[in-house]
Length: 173
Image 1: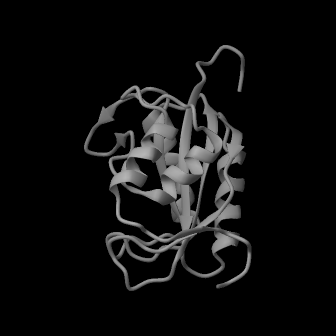
Image 2: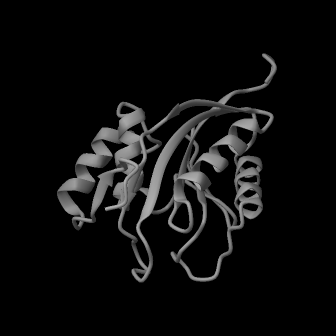
């Protein structure tokens, strides 16, 4: 990145529940950070969580990363989708099993709703596997609605169903 380009902070959610889940997350993170115009700032711990929506599938391993980028939101989305495709992602069942899932969660304070991209991610405030790792790396980050990540997590914990989540220790449970 050169010093003349505008830098944006973005948060990306990573998830996998097929095959060697950690290997897929590591490969995706390597590919993200190898892209021109993207620099990794922080990465959360990994969390294992039960599936949401379509339940007949294995648990996911999830994490959230913060990046600095010179890319525009749609450019970043296309980079993430290209990585998913290269790693073998197939969209067969909505919320179904996947080798890798890369979601653009936040892009600075941008609020965007197009056919192709919505930021903030439309369901991120309903997902503990997003809010817990995001809170780990950015509890004071102020979202476009004025609330911090920690405040969003408090609201979620007070009102949401108790979806199971645990810190990933590297051992199958």
